[in-house]
Length: 343
Image (cartoon, rainbow, N blue to C red; front, side):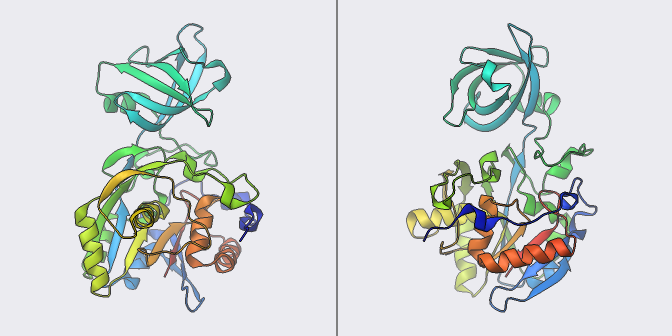
């Protein structure tokens, strides 16, 4: 079946793109989609607790966004450069995006923070990025905290006044170039309320890369290639999920990132297994879900792989109709926007 990228387009007024996070986090609106009945409800994120019960498992992504945007100079010409860290390849070596890219060739030396962080361009990636090897004497995390900025998506034009608002409250493992935004709706109190209903909350890690958010440019979506992202799913999480399913519980994934990690492992092995590695799984309509039973997610960009994943989970026509209702009801869209809960 040939499915075209244009089938995943929808109308979105620019004023509905959320520019700032809402306070408190769990006061976001939440559009609830019931897959079997095709019913739609209008709720708030804090009301998700009413849809969860023992022995369900809520699976979160505990990745932490790093201040991955750096501003510096090209050492020889003193020209200004902007760098975005995408993926750590090894100790001190990163895949990056650089602007202006045309002038930054292999061998170029870049300086950040008056020389506190130095980087040499080693290679050019197939996607046009740069592989850079850094030299530094201070801890790398300290340098990023001092010199880096949070890598907000290009559709957010307002300044982020509190850096932690682009982190989930349970962020632990540093490595993402973007936030797993479905998790931004949770407060510590909401998580405790969910646990009080006998729901187990467990964490996997998937470091979010920018490739996830890039629009699909090929006419046939099957020709799109996903960039790989690092994930880690522990044996404890696998055991928890399998026991819950045996007891009749549901696996409720917080975000498309969590979904990709769990379903990617199942697709690879034919079962859920403890594993760490890289996944480039692309989930679109026709995909059979084997692990995830319910999904909390945000509203995604037109023609994006994330919208395609959600359409695979709930049905394209149902999802696009829900998006139209969300636009009519003036829901807030994208990273700092409202939520959609699919049961």
